[in-house]
Length: 317
Length: 217
Image (cartoon, rainbow over all chains, first blue to last red; front, top):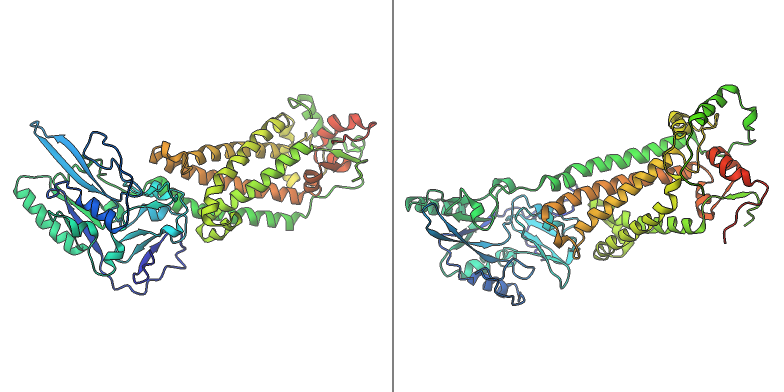
């Protein structure tokens, strides 16, 4: 919050005519690279995250799996996912993935958010929630293609990984990167991380992991948290990591298509009513009252034909 | 007020129902618009702060829905489409052009009002159902995220449709002189009734010409 030293390239619920401050645009895009093949699932990153961000989630229950806590929460911004899979030859493989916000280049949460400035995207690519502006509607949850944001019951506000925006803004790496004992998490410019990923993928392939690759999904314009996966051809194996994540067409329809249609609808309705009133004038009661019996024959016939077949409403006053 | 030559068109209970709904709808619609068109985010100031507005919007929406259920049972029997409504549809051009030349056999509500009645019933019901699906923190957690996305899209479409219809409804009230007073006090003049709802006047009001106009406590 309050990252005035950083350039904001996108701001939720803000008209393009009045953009957020973006004069300090000489910033490098950053990225976090998580190499699942090096992760041992020690959960040191979870602890470092809680420590740096002053989070102390409630201690939960063992639900029979190693995932602990069992899911992301408003106070657990990252969780190591453990998936046991068997390959064709029946050999067990344990797939680990550090789950958390992907910091999309085109963030669905930001698109869906209706509160001006509650979600911002900095020029370095970090997507951050400005919790004091949050209204607790949960639209970010509907907008996110990765099911990451969570609403906190304590204050009814949404939370997620900040990519340690506060640390990054002063030239430090995120807490999880700093603490990772195996070096599975790296941090740097997006270009550097892609280079690093390429060499890692090459090495994994040389060791027989044919499906190894970089996860930087283009459906959301790429992400600022990327994975090196040993099975990049089947990312769903890693706790339902989507193969082709994108902002839902329902969210796009709601935020992109319906808005101009609605605006035209309002203008047309108000203009129509105005023109009608100016053109026709108020509908006042005619005086004197014409007696029905003295009305011209042709006008009577309209009513008469209807009376012949006329129904009456089901009830009376 | 002197109601000797006036006709009681809308009873106290129905007027209260209508105007309570208007008050709640005004707050719900403005706060809803503030989120749909963020450039109008100042509109949620009608409910205090953005956070308060977000919290109160669904509760007030529920009040609107409950009042709608009451109004449905109070008004539905006047709003069943009948064959004579075709006369109104055929002459809708004259109606809008303010030409009162022929009697159109209009019951207590004209065909346009009946269509509005059913559209409002449909849209507010849709808003209630989709609103519950998206209602945090109480109900949204019980629905899968794709269902919430669809509900949010449908909710905003229904909301827009409803607000546009209500703008039309308000305009008609302003255009047809005597309508707003009729809904506020309950009373309309005999001339008003004859002109705008001739069949209603003939069938429901004229037979009791000898007796004084109905009064409601």
